[in-house]
Every structure is written in C-alpha cells, then in structure tokens.
Amino acid sequence: MPRTSDPTDIPRRLTDAGYLLFNRHGYNATGIQQITDQAGVPKGSFYNHFGSKEAFAAQIIRHYADWVDQAWDQCLSDAPSDALGTIRHTFARFVEHHARTECQGCLVGNFAAEVAESSAPCREVLQTSLDAWRVRLADLIERAQAEGSMRRDLPPHTLSLLFWDAWEGALLRMKIERHTGPLSDTVALLLDHLLAPCASAAVRHPGGAKQQT
Image 1 (cartoon, one colour):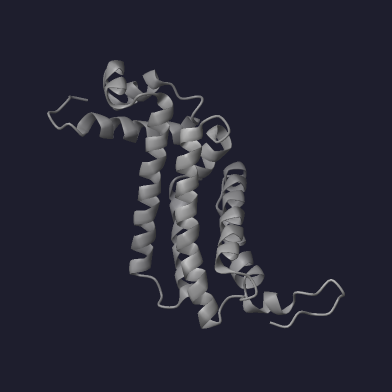
Image 2 (tube, helix red, strand yellow):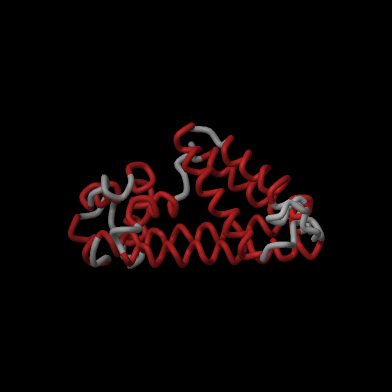
C-alpha cells in the first residue's frame, strides 16, 4: 500500500492489521513482521509509533473497546423502551455480529486468556474495558428491577457480573463448537430464568423455607 502524508495513516493501518491478525492467530503467534507486512509498511515504521508489541496490543484492546461502546450506543438508539427489551435487543445484535465474523470470539476475552497473566499493561486495559461494560449493563439491570422485569434480591452490579461471566464463557464454547447457539442459549437462560423475578421468589433459606422477596 502506498504511504500518504496523513500522520494517522500508518498507525491506522498497523492497528487494522493487528486487529485482524490477533483475531485470526492470537497474540503470541503474531509477530511484528507479520503485522507490518499485513499493513504494507516497513518494519521500522512500527517502532516509530509503538514502543513495543505489548504497548501495541494494549492500543488494539482500547480500539476494540471503543468499537464495542459505539456498537452498544447504536443498539440503544433503536432498542425497545423497556430495560429488559433493551438488554435482549443489544445482545441479539451481538450474537448477530459473532455469526457474521464466523465465531472469532471477543478480542477482550481472547486476550484475557492469553496475556492477562504475563502483561500488566494489557491486563489494566482489559480490566478497564470489562468494568465499563459491566457498569453499562448494571444500569440497565437497575432499570429492569425498577420496572419489575428482573429479580431484585441481588444488587444490579452482582447480576451484571454474573451475566458477563456467563457471556464470556459462552463465547469460549462458541469458538469450540463453531456456532452461536451457546450465546443465544446463555442469554435466554439468564433473562428468562436465572435473572427473572420468579428466580428470586424461589430462593430458599438454609433451613429449607422459601425466602420471600
């Protein structure tokens, strides 16, 4: 690819290439030479913009988190007015995205499994991204609780953590089974059963009596 006078051109081409290759091959199996070859720039250009492969990966995660935020905002713009409907609508869109991208998975989840233990900078960015998504979902859960469409015996943040943990686990199973069934099934189980108002009514005290909510 020809170079341009735009100072953002090379960093953009590098991050686009990095996102593609990290998704396809993972972090450890992707080298800087592969990234610059994919971007169509000299290898030395990489170090003009990024201090290391680790710093580059952290930037890729930030870009991916920004994309998810934009996708979330787009979902909210045409979602149903009720909170539970909004959650269903948003995650249905996410399921459609994973079907279109042939079950590559979530870049944050993929990086968490591969580099979270070995890279403090990447771990920090991953944590920031996950925390922001959990807060977004917790806000919707709080609304759903107020509307009476979700169990109220547990705090919104706790239910949001449960939801995201289950979703990330379903993404891993999706990658193994190569279809989005695990995602749809997990969302349905959570919203129709585990997080539904009737679920809290069925909670029992240690002695065996049902807890009234």
